[in-house]
Amino acid sequence: MSNRVVIVTGAARGLGAVVAQQFHRAGYKVALADIAFDAAQALAVELSADQSTACAIRLDVTRKEDFVEARDALISRWGHVDVLVNNAGASKVVPVMEITAEQFDQVIDINLRSVLFGCQVFGQYFASRGVGRIVNIASLAGQNGGSATGAHYAAAKGGAITLTKVFARDLAAQGVTVNAISPGPLDLPIVHESVPADKLDKVVSSIPVGRLGSADYVAQVAVLLASGDAYFANGACWDVNGGLYMR
Ligand SMILES: NC(=O)c1ccc[n+]([C@@H]2O[C@H](COP(=O)([O-])OP(=O)(O)OC[C@H]3O[C@@H](n4cnc5c(N)ncnc54)[C@H](O)[C@@H]3O)[C@@H](O)[C@H]2O)c1
Image 1 (cartoon, rainbow, N blue to C red):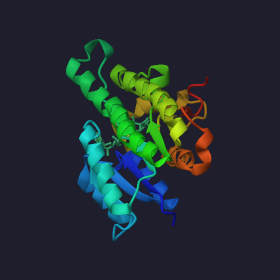
Image 2 (cartoon, rainbow, N blue to C red):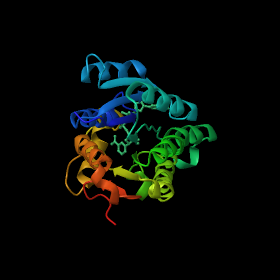
Image 3 (cartoon, protein in one colour):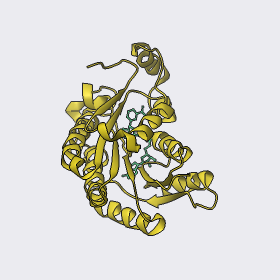
């Protein structure tokens, strides 16, 4: 067991839960941060019955003060934090011409403000320690404009990739790296729940490798980018999309 600590946002379910599990398996102490506190707590107890190596944190990624409180709580609990994974995200599909100001702001807040605030709060803290890793979960939609997920979501994820570069440049000299991962459609419950079966078949047949992506693999990329050896990977966007988008 290493003494490294990671905080994963949106870790109560989906990709974030898998990322939390993979970091825990890699020997990290893991903070599962989510607005869905009870679900995050249940998962934390599953990972560590006495919560010595996993805990839940109530955190709304649209609120900067929640990141500050989470950072301080983790420093009190485990002494330090080494890695932030900005994973929380959400979208509601609306045709581009019909997106209201409220819908736009909501999706930008969850997917983009979250990255700004997470990188500000933990970036400054990591810089003060002279070491740290930030991994932002973006999306293929942020690279190719998306379709199924909505224009507001695609714009937010494109912004997250850009913020990754800005913070990567800003923090590099202080030992902090910032990278993004852009997954294509993953084999997760939410994908099966939100996309009708016939549409999903079409999506799958459009993916060159012919199947949905593995959340476990995306999580392993996050663990890899968080390692000390990954210091030369900085400001990059790691494409994990089965060949749907090549550049
Ligand atoms: N599922 C995919 O195929 C896919 C593909 C590309 C990118 N992504 C990205 O991966 C990330 C996770 O997606 P997922 O499919 O697991 O989604 P999900 O909806 O299953 O899980 C999202 C989690 O984020 C939490 N959350 C939502 N709003 C929050 C807030 N304001 N503060 C804190 N937590 C909040 C939810 O409670 C939930 O636990 C997202 O950033 C998403 O855009 C997913």
